Amino acid sequence: MVNSDVMPLPGSRRFLLVNPEFPIPYKSRNHKDYLPVGLLKISRWLEHEGCEVKLVYGNLPLDELCFRPDEVWITSLFTYWSDYVVRSAEHYRRLFSRARIVVGGIYATLKPEDCKRRTHCDAIQRGVHSIAEQFYPDYDKLNGEIDFQVVHASRGCIRRCKFCYTHIIEPEYVPKRCILSEIVDTGGRKLSCASPDDVDLTRVSITRKGLVFYDNNLLANEHIEELLAELIQLRKKRLISWCESQSGFDGRLLEKKPDLAEMLKKAGFRVPRIAWDWGFSYKKHIEKQIEILEAAGYKRKEIFVFMIYNWDIPFLEMEDKRIACFEWGVQISDCRYRPIDQLYDNYDPHRWGQIGTDYYIHYESGWDDYLVKQFRKNVREQNICVRHGYPIYVKAFERKKPPRELVRRVKDAPTLREKIQILESAGIREYWVPSTRRLPRDYHHLAKASQAVVLDF
Image (cartoon, rainbow, N blue to C red; front, side):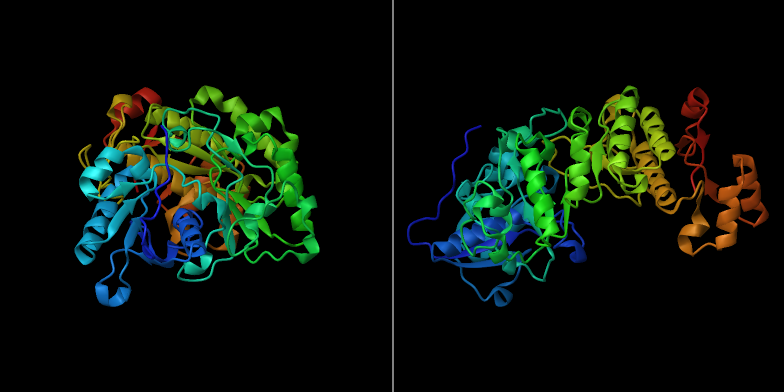
């Protein structure tokens, strides 16, 4: 795929940048996982060119906008949230019939023909805008202060996982050599430096000291040791406070270079995540990766394991993977699979019995709505146990703080039977042992074959 940057039309001076009303809670609009960093870079670029820019969330009425643009640039996220992009395009077309409308982002890149047909936009930006990428994001355009900033130390990924679309959006892996150039707010173009040695750090001021890396494969960067050494230096001088890798760490690369884990810890990376995308047979590799992170100083309950479900791996095998994580004492970050061309997702966590026309269900591997929701429930309740050190999930403990003495007795009881007896003697009947498979009600055909527990509170 060959991308070309969309440029403003001659004479366009006023730009409305729109982040559609995606189904994200209001309090999470400025969450580190959903920041519209592409629009923020475009804003800084356009203002650098002397344009007037306004960034909005959702479809605002004319009296709230107080702004009449020459062009409206709309971002997009996942393909299954495409309806929100279409609504924004229709809304602003009604308000500003003469304005040029441009749509970019993930959906526009993956499904450009569909995007053009449904939004009736005038232009589509496919992939990363190479000019805007040279500018520091305009965080002042956000509604509310944040204490972190988004960083890309690379673009693309060296892997070609069939459930992922990074290689379509960013087809080439492009590593960067210097972090400092990415995190200093210059008010315009990013700093030009090959290493922190090129800059007098005593004269550097970094406003947002938390760094969230949006790299798809941070450790694949050929300069990773230099980058981590730079981050360690910046942290020692208190120019940064913490780091986080949104997509986690490539565990296979950690196994090849275990010393990287200690550097990650010293650089301030928190909530380390690795991925267990494949079958149960990969268990020894995941265990080794956890041991590497633990040896570097991370507590096991701080470590997360990405797991993709509603995919090729059947429910019972996913349950075995979940149980392994419980035995290791690590948490799970579960990811429900949707195909890259899925244009809708009406998944409702409170409505059991949905079908494939509501949201994507991977029937080919035996998944259905009940199994999808049961796995999600099992993971959630298991994570609570891992975080708090509970050997058994007790629904009553989630609703109110449990008596310390009762928790201590349950933890200290030498056998599972004795733990359960203590709970039942205290009048507690709703509990679950995460070290066992758990299926939805009426799944006795699977339970018989797997000796799983059929329980659903």
